[in-house]
Image 1 (tube, rainbow, N blue to C red):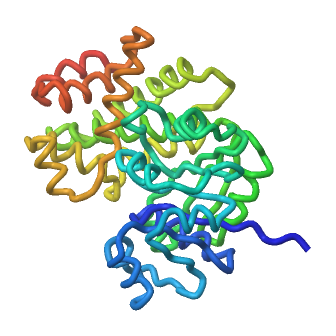
Image 2: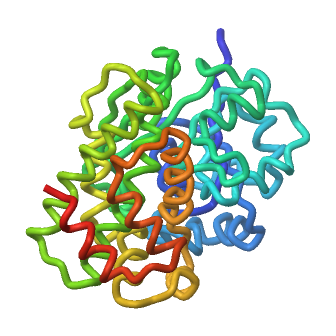
Length: 332
């Protein structure tokens, strides 16, 4: 009889917590690496993560918890990474065990700052993991609604369809519906880009623009996303599918969106530093804006006015009000 494949989640934040909750509906045991000793001990005692989605109660006998990333990586066959991209490098530097023969899925919506790569490409180039052993979890799906068991949809992308199906099966439940895709590069870039557009939506709201403008902004954003992804990875895809348009809409409009919240504060006059300190959470779109700008420079493209506007505000210190006034002339 075959031994069941083991799954583990790397990360202690809200999305990691939500993924563990989803897996716990289907698996008898889940490995879970979280950096915080306090969070681990609290979870074992009180049965919930003290810092994120604290309403979610776990059956701790299902959890193999550890503060040692090497212990969890050695334990599992499938690793789902759900660490903010800005911190991924630091965590991977702790590895002494090999990632060879591991199946790595990224639930990270951003770019690895040290290499400027999306997470799948980072694992492929830096750790020699073949693309058929790399996958992506894409939305539209907010961790807070998973915690409330509100009906949510996930796209599971992998070049190896059997691996995508296995992960999808183990994440599915009465409140989680899944579909699979072979567009690992496109879905990961979409997950990165939608955070930039959510910041733009937040800035617009903070500046006092209304729903009419927001609809035009999102309409232009999906077309801009299509052009960007087509340049970096040309293949047949329907940009109106949930993994692209759906994820963009929920991140651009939802009250749970930290990127929209971050943009809203910028639009109201906060500095980048003060907005980050106030939120006490990572807005992935901040780092993504710089990476997308650098990619655009490589392609010598000027067809991304929304990304350019967000970059100018966040990194060139330009006044949001003036930048958006110019942006409104470029949208249709």
